[in-house]
Image (tube, rainbow, N blue to C red):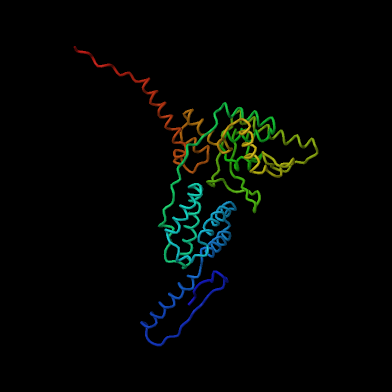
Length: 361
């Protein structure tokens, strides 16, 4: 009988037993072998499980950022009970870890990251036959309280773009495009000339850029693995055209452009894109100089809040942002919709005439 692969050596383990007698005796012997299987796997520690789980994740060719996410979460679990045997781990152990992380000032989101890892890793141990049950399913985790999505006002955005353009016209163009389209940072930086169709007045968002220290810069699908087309107005067209012209000027300096260069280029021939961290860091630098508490992703919130305030329907806003469905938009921007509901109430109140009751005295 095979006991599966030894987590430590990677070799398959086998056990056999010769018995004399009928089927009833043979069944008892088989049950004994099954019991011995559990005993062999009881030597697996949390560290051993996490190591095997991460190896399996890499074998599935998960996105580099996902692997990095799991590796970071694994450090918290390993420091707490890395040498604990997996069948000795309890839901209370996990809850104590989550409580300790919270007391140390770590966010509820970070705690849930660790829980997500342990839930998946222990679930994989059950599939491998190393455990009878997944105790992470019984553990309680802190609730993540969603904060209202803050965004700069049009006036503040204007100041940001003016300040940015004085130091880096290209990065100012990145900010402008993100604010006008609602594109995520990686989606904006992955744009190429071929994604721009001036005749149809459309901009196609079909891919994104990712970065990890181990993998470097790499292309990947959009967050929802979808492709969307953004309508182009004169302002957005001017931003895109200015970037194309800026790269073309490098030809005059002796550079030969590559076929289909990046719109936001990190090399003068357009071969490489901007590093994903560059616009984020520069945006914070500009905002700090102006006394604004914003980060780059809040330009995406600017797009959504301005469109909703203008009365654009949620489904259209959701499509422009690339949300999986409109329910995501409703959850993230519920506070904006509530404000719009108050405005709608006041509008209706101004349009409906209700006669005063007649005084019969």
